Length: 161
Image (cartoon, rainbow, N blue to C red):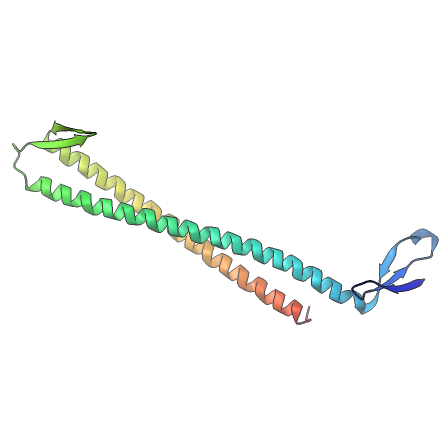
């Protein structure tokens, strides 16, 4: 066999037997640094993918917080409107703004509409709370997997693999 070294310093033996002619064989412990570098690159790629996924999850959490904030404000406004409607006498005139026009509306109907809006907003807030919990669980899972990948990379770079 012909013994050579690759540009990376890996010992290469070219097989001269008929059944393996033209094949190169990596031998000995010289191939270990090559394996470590390859594994390190794979882990680096995995780490980048996990970090991108974590970033997306964090953006989704931020969007969820913004939407929840808007719904919370709307809920407070609608509760105030309902309190104001409760203060009115039964014969009071109530108007609803539809586009640029004020349309007269029955007090009971106005209360019912505001009550339904409050129910809808409350249901949306509960749904968003559940979604937020799921996103936070995913975020924690991604952080944990990133931590484990970093530990593996440190182990490989230290030469303990």
